[in-house]
Image (cartoon, rainbow, N blue to C red; front, top):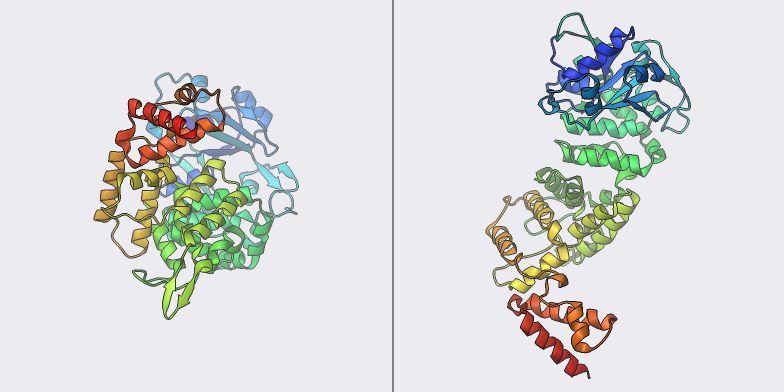
Length: 468
């Protein structure tokens, strides 16, 4: 098979082979190369032990029990003395890590998460039979001809790629009982590649879905975010629902199914949210998660009286819900806050009569750093509701936001400081300083022209005289 692999990839295999060992590229990189996609994370397997691998790659590191040695691109460039090598030309960075793992076999998986024991294997066949899906169970090895590689495909992975199928290696029930997260990985690969899940594999996921409760929320979170950043995130979420996995991932969204809407909405809350996610122009997984969850409070807020449907306060209810979701998924504090803000304030409305002060308050509520994310959510929300991507109102709001960004947005932007307050009031500090600064800031928020040092100093004197 004629293929052009990165120079360092070929060099790693050559180094192992020249020392008398067998060496293969395995897993995702093989799949991606055969699909004509740019491969990023290169993995290798060999019959050399970790100690033997490290002897060949002195700058490598070894810190796990699964026989995986890591070595960075930069260290390999230095080892092979490739002074003029530019990794970027081969979709690599100097800090990327190549992983080389000794052939291994695995014992039973009593916790549906990790093998109870790992032993070094002797053949590539032993190594490939423990992998999850056929498209990930292929390997490449060097031949004597330049840019010629032998494909080892024991489970029909190449044919499944051509048919766009995700199929488990061997017995799917056995694969999922070994590691229940593989069920989410099946959905993720389908969403990333636009593939369908093979019938027996799909049925096994449905049957074994309850095993996902044995998986840590951190691992579930990582797969969920990968699904959300895939090419087909909405299809991935729909697959999670149809396979019964969603109840263990985002149970809060299931009540959205079938909740009718009115007004400009032509679909229920569930399908609107999926359409909004599919239309999201942001690649950021938190923005996409917020887009999926922005109406999660609607089922609880739903009211229908005299044929009129309302969802009063759904954004407040939803914000409380996503706060708990973020904690459960162990998102970072920053991402939890972003998720909350985007949900809480997604109902912002604009009309030309809004004052600059109102625009500034909107920016203050959302946070300057989150304005673009909010606009990305609104675009997805609009398209998901059957509207065009943007409108004159949205464009005008963006223009006005740009204009007021040059006016005070935080107390630190005032032309006076706490020291000025303490000097004029004759105090050494305390809560009174903050109270005065807040009062001044509220004035400036209403009229940015008041952010004038002489005016503000005079106002501090007036506050002093008023409170004496």
